[in-house]
Image 1 (cartoon, one colour):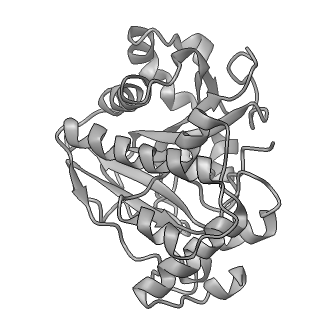
Image 2 (cartoon, one colour; image 1 turned 60 degrees about the vertical axis):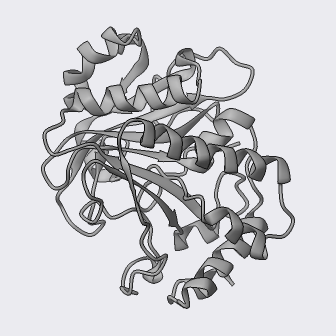
Image 3 (cartoon, helix red, strand yellow; image 1 turned 90 degrees about the vertical axis):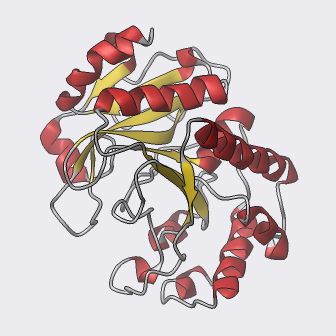
Length: 286
């Protein structure tokens, strides 16, 4: 399976709120029930993990942005400027460009991203430690299966990863800075305004899936044995530093399964109907 789909504006990734679970039941058909059961546990686990760390839950924004000039008016990422510090959000998202890639099992018409900004004074070390704690301690992911993709600025994280017994030299692929800036795909740089020039410096967090001992990626994009499950913001001034986790990708790391396209397509339409919204981009999915 091809699992590195960072095309238009990247994940991030993601996650969802408990109130989304009943919404799936409203319209979902052809369900992968095993995945959805685990997905519900993932959501509950994310909420418990962040609450246990002292973060409050902020309410997600509507799936509709009101700006049809980009992504057909559908929300493509959580809004860095809207998320308060010391809080987390579980945001439903959709990307019009994904319709052309719906044959890929890892591409979904509706997905969810958890965004968390720990505070105004945190450092890249703080956000890196936070991500590793959530993934390895709260969710029990195998550190040996975790790797990172970033840019030369990530050298500042060498000491913290070494201290976490995740040797930087073995775990981190550093991309060419100019290449990563041109790609705008968040494994190195993230642009909060997809049409703007201001960016944050990130480390993409990848997880090795399946029965393989392939070492950390040596080139970008990684092989299909690796799926990106989140991003760590380690630098930049256009938004507070933080982390993001894709809830579906985290569930995939645990189960090796994804929901079906039709299953989440029904969920997208149900969510828009519940909100009373009909952004232009929704027609692309019909």
